[in-house]
Image 1 (cartoon, one colour):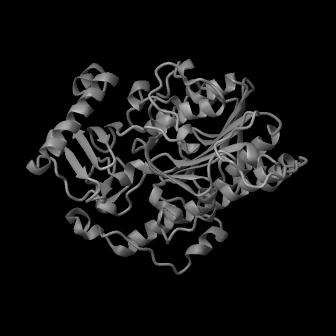
Image 2 (image 1 turned 180 degrees about the vertical axis):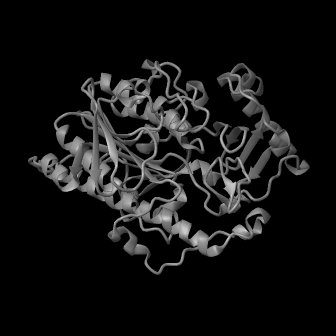
Length: 483
């Protein structure tokens, strides 16, 4: 079915907007909750590290709505996730480590696999609690119908199973048990997905809803974008990292890297503009005050840092030389949460958080007990959002078993100052970084006698975690994985 975007908007937006309730009480007391279940809007971008957001310190990228969201909510400085898309999405949806639900690496187009049946998702739990759940955009947890999001807790889906280009998308549109529709729509993909997201909000504005808006950009460069988004970059020269210090990348032309920056920053700006459209609709409908907005990315991206392009499965610029990694550039993503009346505007959090924390957080936001779901590995960040004094975790763990572009088996422990990565495919590649004195992770201290005690302690903690969650080297053989 072909649908013109203008006709789609006209058909879907014929609703009466509700009026926002004014705040008549003056100064707000943060940390309190209303009796009504709050709506939840989760916005997830594709391949956007935290450093591609203005409020995180980037003066080149135009992200006025993301920055405004941070001024109205809480910005997390160190939110981490698996450095590739499918494992990150699996961890976020299930509250478990990606290998525990069988998602080691990104799911390739020719693979017949996905998030296994029986994997409990936050969408299922929220739906059981009375929420209407919807996903708009990229799924990337299985293309076969048996893996679709409508069988993993979502009442509604408008999107695609994997990546999609920037123009004229063909979307699967499915509601519950209804027959799936294929809708080909003319226009810019990011605009169209936002149209569907706004329509979902309109349709469900009178009851609690959970919307997962999963943009397929900037994803390794996502052009073209509308002229209004590109206009911010006309004649602009971007600040580039010192990639030439890495011998493998030193011959890469600076002009080509400038083009890559444009191809990524422009779609980030397009997403940002569309986020503004969605926020305005929440406000118009009187839903802003009782809606939790969570903005994040599925993984980071290097783009010249460390001489690399891409993420955890990166290669050196201009080459096919792989560099499997868990650099912060690949694992640290933006995380901004707005919840009027609960989260203090303009607040910052320095604690270590992870996508694995989303599931228990959404449960507590909905007034549910996290103990009702077994085997959750994450921790609810609700106490942090409320500004409560709380003893927080002092370590985070990640696992990435890479099978495309190269074979790698990485295990990571990250504390505030230190990061240790074990490479089980070749333990000579193990890494240890002092993040306080070397935030760019340029000086690998693994095996250095001056940090012997740190290495010993972190190794013990990492090994203990591996044993607990089935991520040890010997577990690879049980899962029939090669070294």
